[in-house]
Structure formats: C-alpha cells, structure tokens
Image (cartoon, rainbow, N blue to C red; front, side, top):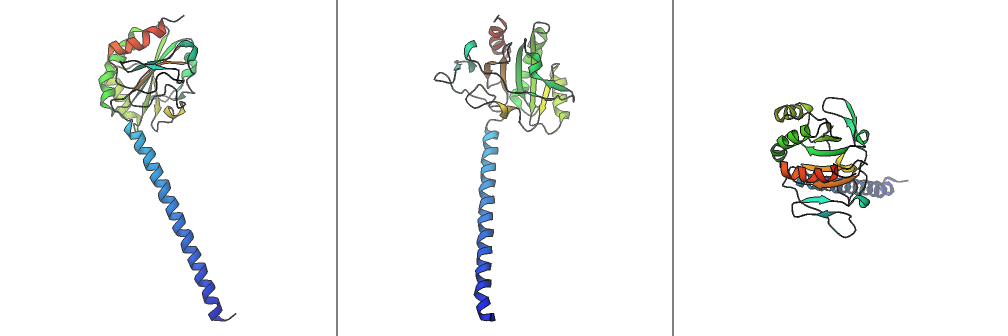
Length: 219
C-alpha cells in the first residue's frame, strides 16, 4: 500500500479517536453536572427552616398547621435499618429499641437551628428516662466527631448519636414516607419501630412534647 493510500486511513482513525474523546468529555461533563445538581439539592435541605411535605392523598400522613406530620397507627411504615457506630465509636442498632418509643433527631454541630433546639432535647430526654422512651441522635455532615462531641457536652446531651457524616442513613428512608428531608429533622417511632410523627423544623419544648406524648400514650 502506498503512502498516499495510507494517509486517508490515518486521518480517519485520528478523526474517530477525536470524536470518541469529545464524546467521553461530554459524558463526564453531564455526570459532573448531575452530581452538582444532586449536591445542591441536598444543600438546600441542610440546616434550613425546614418545611412540610405530603398530607392526605395516598401518602398516609397529614401535616398540621404546626408543621408536625402524623400517621394513624394502621398506616405507618417501618423505619429502615438505622445502625452503625456512635460518636463514641460503639455499635448501635435502633431496632434493638423496639418495645420503646424512639425519638430520632437528625442534627449537625454546625447547624444553628440544631443548636437552638438542643437544650429542649436534653431536658425532655432526661425526663423520659426509665419510661420506655429512647432518644437517639443522627449526627450528619460533621467531618469529624470532635465538634459533635463538644456540641453534646455543651448542651448536656446524654443519649447516643449515630455518626453519619455523609447522610447515608437519611437516604435509607423511602420517598413518599415520613423521611428526614432537612437538618434538623425529628421522627418519633412507635413501639413497633414504625414512623408515627415527623417535624422538619427546629423544635421547642412544647412542640417536642406534642410529637412525643400521643405516641407514648398508645397501648
């Protein structure tokens, strides 16, 4: 084959290689944009004023004017697997608390609304000790446990918190259920481990009790 006949083939191969490289670059850009959009969506829910979701229809839950969503006993959905290491490095599985009412509070030491509600959680959790109620925190988006442990010490939090820096535990909740969509979020699980109530805003003592007491009163 002459040099003249080989030249177009080399040119075609070069063009194909350039096309493949450009296509791969476009795919990488699309993936990066998608990842950025997902991260932005998560950031929108981080440490904000919260909000309400659903209510009526086939969602199974109703959101009151106070922002607290509740589910009738017969329509509740079990919470997902919530297990892992605590801030102190110990193993914890929320399923082990079945038979008790569980209060789950999603928080971060960097979150101002979390700081605002922490004293109420510390107070109410102590009052319910020994009454078949267990408080559990889910600490998220703290890069290390140092700041989170200092937060607990500052506010007198004595109940355990799962360490979930990347938010993986939050993503285990199914869409369309009472899932923790914001930071802070609070869920109340009934004695069978089902989600009975949710708030997506910081709670004061009165609203925390309003979420908790009806579930404790269930037999």
